[in-house]
Image 1 (cartoon, one colour):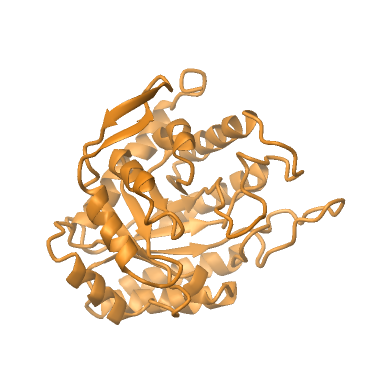
Image 2: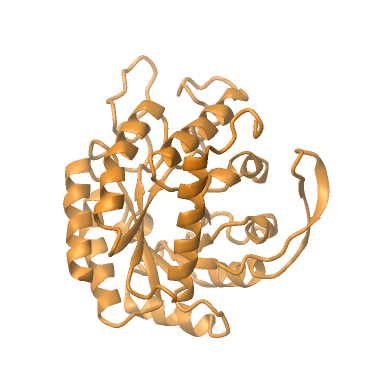
Length: 327
């Protein structure tokens, strides 16, 4: 797949530039801008994803002095019990068994979006899948349900991109902080080599592993108290800006309409002196809200089938408002 769907020169330029800029923000070399991760909760319709990316490309250019805009392109959805697991497993939302074509569609989409000049971010759930998509991703994440997994900490240590690790679903910061410390170190790990063969690999450690604050059952951690707690627990971390704030998930109580207020609050906390904040994340799609995936019921184009998202018009307004607050 890597030989038949290689990075084009344009896609490679987008990827490499974004990775360097993310590293600059996390390290504090760039201490003015925020990373903005923005996009659908999950990708189920590649046509709608490409339309969204085309629109987002305008914001990437318009606000580049204040924000590094990166598109959420998430193909795997961790499920608490059961549910649609993502495009690579069920690309037609039909419930049929997974086929290899889902991986191909995912890689094709990442390449197409990157060629538009829009860098991509994703969450890595299955380590095997990561080997097919990693070269197309500007920054990755490890989810709240897998932050304590040794396998995923080793994966973060192996990946050659900045990786954000979310705090646990209970709201505890310890899982994310400990995972960041583990991911920064080299490991001997069972993984796949460059040819897709099982192997024992030596990871180098990911010096740009950082913490995602996404809230939990204990409530929101979108506040200065949580920021200071992470700072104190990562006192020896060389990154000056190791925190990204998630405006969705538990921090919004699963209500997409609260994301706008959350995003503005993050900008206020940052400009108020919390310089360790590197960025924020919002879930956004062409149409606001979400819809249920039901048999024999046509899907609304451009609307999420997982968590609710803000719509495109509100996204444009919100990105402009965040940018104004950073000026």
